[in-house]
Length: 299
Image (cartoon, rainbow, N blue to C red; front, side, top):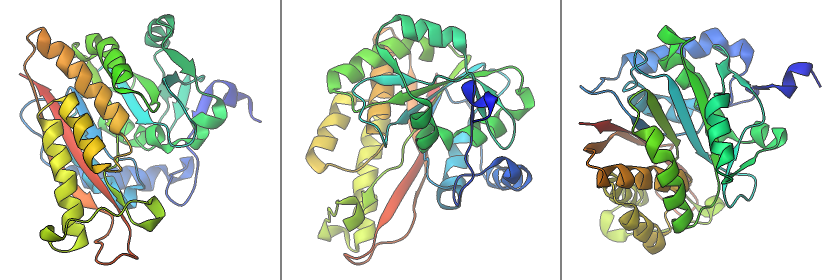
């Protein structure tokens, strides 16, 4: 095992995970997607963006990353759900640097130290770190969005487990003080509905028309609740429809952090800017994953 593995985590090369050799091509792709998107008037304090292969969701994710202002952003918290290991809390990486095909991203050891002192976190093993794509897929986009200030920021990757509602509240409270700081950005990693037999989820409201329209209606119901910034309504929606939103716990943490800041009089709004599906499901043999991109702004 090469020595840098002790302190670095390299993006793996694979059919949908870009490797270091893919840098120029990836850079051109990201540039292309970002150039087709408008930025809103205010910079994002937090974004929700998908984490599938870029061929599926790269153009959707651009809508969120276009809202990042690299001139004010100094720390980027990346909250991704755990797909592979059972985790009832949140976990921090054991490495110092994440390597991407564009350039290396430094993990903020000072903030990691503050989080570790709370006793609320565990360490993810190097294997877990390498296997998990929910944070990894955001690294090249983060690097691209920040390239004009690439030596002036750090990242804080956090793997979010299957948190109870009370734990989502606790972590929301903890992260709220960081969300209050305009030099911090939160990236919340989530795909939306995973529909089809292979996902063991086949909710279908026939009144919406074809299956893919029912999926869109279901997702947009959830997106609308997220825009209302109400963690309790979001939990109730998930209990009712069991929508397979894989980043539901990171989203829950963000909503609880926002609620905490609203109590202190902070005025914020969240808007979804794009929605897409990997394919259009028309029969029970089909499957699809949905993607949504949105941004939280402070007024």
